[in-house]
Length: 337
Image 1 (cartoon, rainbow, N blue to C red):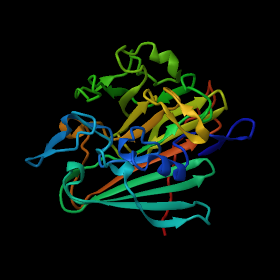
Image 2 (cartoon, rainbow, N blue to C red):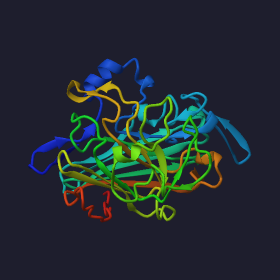
Image 3 (spheres, rainbow, N blue to C red):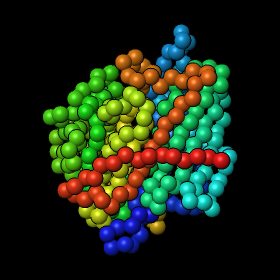
Image 4 (cartoon, rainbow, N blue to C red):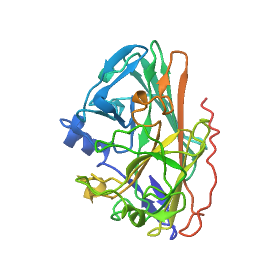
């Protein structure tokens, strides 16, 4: 994705793998080992499921433990690694869009029931994107928790780390996790912790208080978003890079947001540039991780006859600057015909 910065030049702000043809040629035998999920739709359940198992309606389900002993991002053959169908593509109109679909069969990666998934990408304005994820459970109740896994570097994809960027996250609470990043089940206030981005902060200024351990330092935490239970589109996060003057707002209908500072990144990407730790951040809007094993978390179960809908709207807004975060909501009025 390209954005215009204060000097009116175009800047590539998505951190991604090499272009598709090269990516497929180089990685055709190793796609199943992908651990970055660059720009992917992740599912059937994003994030982690503890012990790669859950019980639903009296039936115990064992899942693919691709991050032993847990499941991560839907398993070894999650939605990010599969071929989707193009249902509709319209480019010659004010709001160009594409509709993708995938039919997930009963038992895929251990999940129950057949599931029909659709994702619509639409350009609402020159620098405003809408992503609408929908899913229908066709014959059995099943957990569904989809996410769009873009990596952002508003300073430019090859500008180095993002730790000097300013971030604001509209979540009064977070869900602490153990050393395997499985939630403990608690929902705790962010106030007084390194997870407090209720006011704008530079990422590096907050990181100093994070627990030290064997893993690379950085954020990989789920926020319980304010007003997160009504499924309406609301502002979730704002980010700004002083390097380019580019700001971004993320609005979503999801109850949670995983803030991840690419702690494990070490891969060659666009133009041969090597992305290293903290070269980007992700704002993964989502249901809470491991919700199937925590009854106090918002439910991610979709029953036959119900429609799962998850909207995310990244809006690159140049009214944002380091000292003034201009707050507005993204409105989605797209009609697919």
